[in-house]
Image (cartoon, rainbow, N blue to C red; front, side, top):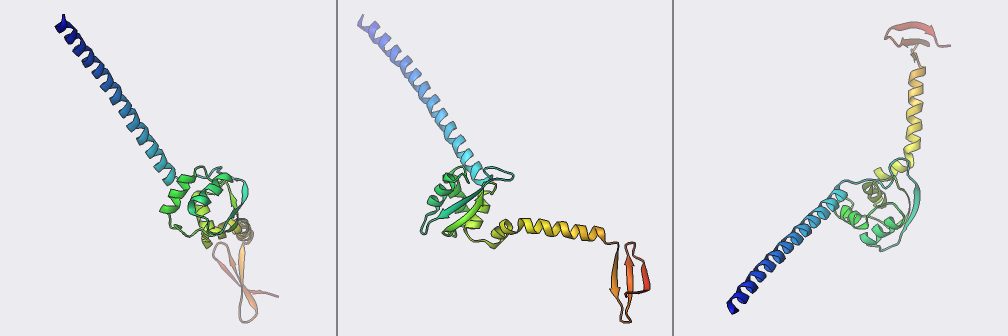
Amino acid sequence: MGNTRDQVGKAGLFVAGGIFRTAFYVCVAVLVFWIGKSAYQFGYNVFNQQAVSPGAGQEVTVVIPEGSSTYEVAKILKSKGLIEDSTVFYAQEKLSTYKGKMKAGTYLLSTAYTPARIMGILAGDEEQTGVTQDTGAAADTAADSQTTDAGTDAADTQNADGTADTQATDGTAVEGESGQ
């Protein structure tokens, strides 16, 4: 009888060991899958910069204190609703051309700005700040130039003798018209 108990015990250990091993492998596979998915999502978020609210957005005043670290700036921006994840913003800043260039100050930012644009503004990049300040003026200038071009059928030039040459839109010139 002792042999039978030993054989049943060994078989039970073998089955229990197999079940334990299988459960362990399943747990490891799930963990590897979860880590891979999380790493992919983090990388995707770092390199696929999106604004919090595309479109018009909402303007927010942000105060960056003197001596703030990049991560502290990221936490401030997240608390104001300008970015979705402070860790992702931190990684984006470290990989960008603005690494270590963000400055303290008070800024007017929009939720429609991408993280790269926010970094540019905080770093004092003239291209980025010029875009935010002059967007309305640039649109007005473009509209004015289109109106001027559409409303003009001929261009006048003044000759030395006081007469004007008129250039018609079809390219023909009419000479000798008096400009007075």
